[in-house]
Image 1 (cartoon, rainbow, N blue to C red):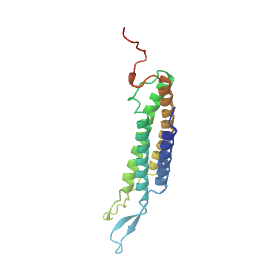
Image 2: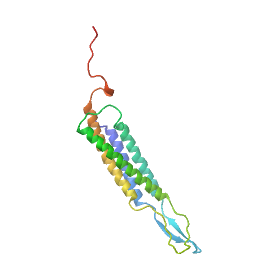
Image 3: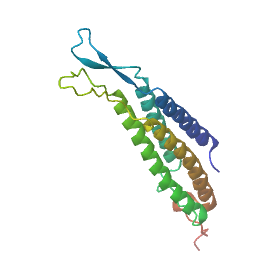
Image 4: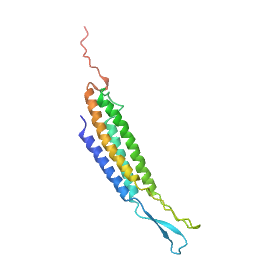
Length: 185
């Protein structure tokens, strides 16, 4: 039977990570080009940098949820064997898709956080070229949040399928003997 505590912890971590990813998208840095007092140089003025913290928080919470899930399922490959059949095949496919969506979410959140933290310094407008203030593209944190959501759903279904296959296998753990031994005469 699947552990309700593991499911609750993983869902809680994933939901908070999703919320932080959405908040990071809403609060990502925006920049404006501002001339200096002498009107000789233009420079970029950035607003709040809180989205970087939100993105890193989402990244860490998603990683923590994945660690809890993999520790509870012994990363699918360790521990006692699973019963062959539909549940094991489904668990294997879900295991792979969970890792793929997890990696995509982590890359999006990390890239968004790094790019959001990067601020261009003073730049002059010497040759009439317009000044470019670097900001994170719209949708990077949203993609990370969406893949966080997919990871949460796939992870929960993976854990349920894994638990069903593990419980159906039964038997003694670690390949113990199932044949009774009699006394030697």
